[in-house]
Image 1 (cartoon, each protein chain N blue to C red):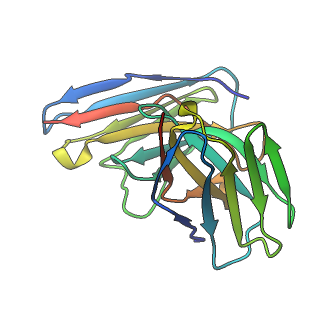
Image 2 (image 1 turned 135 degrees about the vertical axis):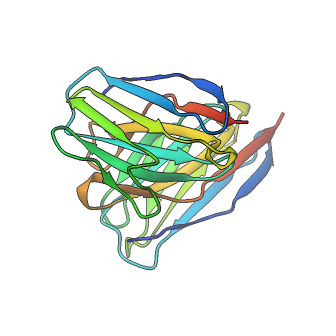
Image 3 (image 1 turned 180 degrees about the vertical axis):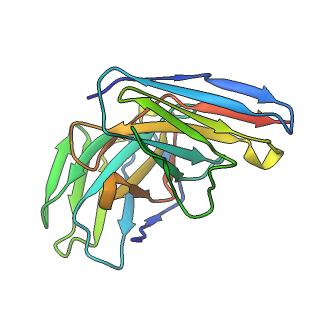
Length: 114
Length: 110
C-alpha cells in the first residue's frame, strides 16, 4: 500500500495565524482525504481533495477555514487558517489503501494553538 | 450517513487476559474495517470484513462480522503490553469516505 509523508509532525502556533500541512504520497492516487482527530476522540473527515477540482468539504467545515490544494496526484496541502485554540488537534491525511474502503494514514500533525 | 457505535470506550486488562471491542450499526453494512492507533501514533489498517458471518484471524486477533452485517467484533486473546492503543472500526461509504467508531482504548497492566 501507499506510503505517506506528512509534515510538520507537530507545531505550536499563535492564534490568528495559519499553518499549512503537507502530504506527499509515494504513488499516484485519485483521492486524498483530510481528517481531524481531537484529543481522545475519533476521526472526523474534513474534506476530500481531488486533483484538478475543488475539494469537497464535509458538513461543519468550510473552504475559507481549511483551504486545500491538490496540484497533482501525489501531493496535497491543508491549511488551517486564522487559528484559535479550538483548532488544537491532530490532522491526518489519508489515501485509500490496497483494499477498497480501507485507508493508509499519514503520521499526523499535532497542532497546538496558543 | 451511516453511523456506527463502538463499545466499550475504555478497557483496562491484566496482561494475559482477553479483550473484545464491538461495533454496532442500525443498518446493514457493506463492509467494515478495523484499525489500531498506538499512543501518539496514527491509525494503521488491520483488516477488512466483507462477508456475512466472516471470521478472520491475525495471530492473537480474531475479527468477526455478524450474520446480519450490522455488527462486528475484534477479540484479542491473551493480551500483551504491545497491544495497548485505541482500536477503531470504520465503515465504508460512497466516494471513498469512511465513518469511524469512537474507538476503544485498551490499556494492559503488566
